[in-house]
Image (cartoon, rainbow, N blue to C red; front, side):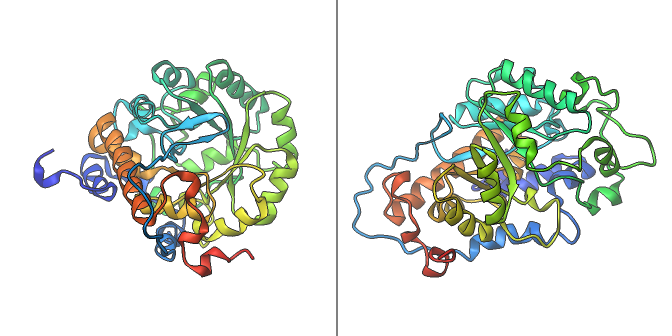
Length: 368
């Protein structure tokens, strides 16, 4: 990159990625459901949280390290499960896994990755988690869990907010299809002959409707527990009541998420949902939040409300599409540097010192 296009923050990567990507692939990454109100609100919600920094604190040394379910993180940013990385760059998930390992954080591999469970495990030197959907063919689900466990993945993340795919109108307009050299490798290895294509005249949403089990209930947690010793998290919880149900069902962690604004448009922003979930959970299991994180200050705000860590999705996809593994590394480095500075300016020497006392009263007591 020339000096004129060198990114100085995470947001700078998106236009670079767009210039390098096939338009329908860019729209697949970038788009949300319906009018994309939730997609936009995920970002706007961070603007509604303001800091009350603490002064005259010794911030000579800032410790951003943390731990979640036995996985040590150098800073509280993890890589969300996102599909089909080879739409952005030929190195795909392998490049992302190497960058996550270098940053000493967790990558969560998507079921719908364009590299397999095994291919990613072969190149990763850091902890991996595996994201799971439950399929109508329960043997596909069972085999995915067994493969992840056999290759050393450290947790299973069950996505619970997709009984059917949301209406993503960019994909409808584009007639989104996968290019011939990109397939959903995990489904391919599970014996799905249509893992890279669906019938002409059909759609991505109709394809997924044929696969996913819409009858799923909280009873599925016990069923999943019966086939793995790995920690189990649920991703897609927004209400405090569902958080309580998740804990009662026996989960080990909760990810507060609205699927990046890609499911039900008009859904509450994750940062608006987070305080009530935090108060209901009351520290019984770790909470992670995703949706709209673009700045180190966003990470600090989420931690102040009560998240243990955040997930990023689109930011690292833009880094990948712009510059491959180096781009993903740059995105993680920028967020790390911004968080370190934000913690210093807010008077927080370590992650354990980040509390609701550093944000405004309305957010601090929203669940009271």
